[in-house]
Image (cartoon, rainbow, N blue to C red; front, side, top):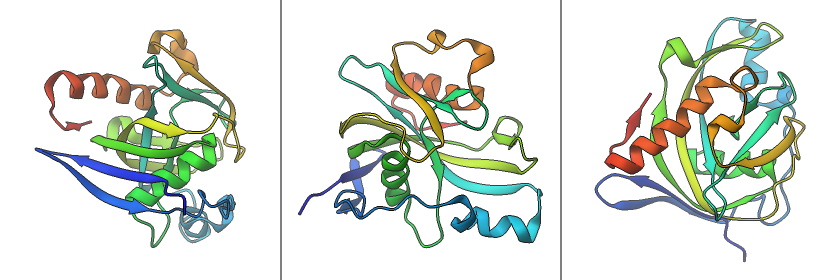
Length: 195
């Protein structure tokens, strides 16, 4: 049996939140259509009203400490692999599933280093007028397997960059890029980051 990994919460000690197999690891994963997702099912009921959306953002590092960015199909902007939780899903499974769907990578382990929830920077309006306020778990991933490839249609390109400045300011999702600085702060101080 193949295991996809562990998600760790960082406090005084590393504590596993979840371990075990994931459908995506055994090749049984199906990419969910937006209409079938939890948020997709809520939209007809609430229209474009702002929804608070629990989710995550992943800083996925390669062996040179460059991190993975993806060019979003809907806006053309560069951001981090990210996603939202489905009804009945754990945070650990959400991170593993969404990373696999968006990048083709299987996470072996990750470290939770912060949460982004500041309404001023975490409220987003999509091109179709739908509004969300993110409540995002921030995960750093150094241990993964696979080759980055855009699978689910949310990304049109994936690449590793060594520095945030490699992406022009007008071409990136700023609230997602703040997570890079938060991770650097976490590494320097060991303090859980709240954005």
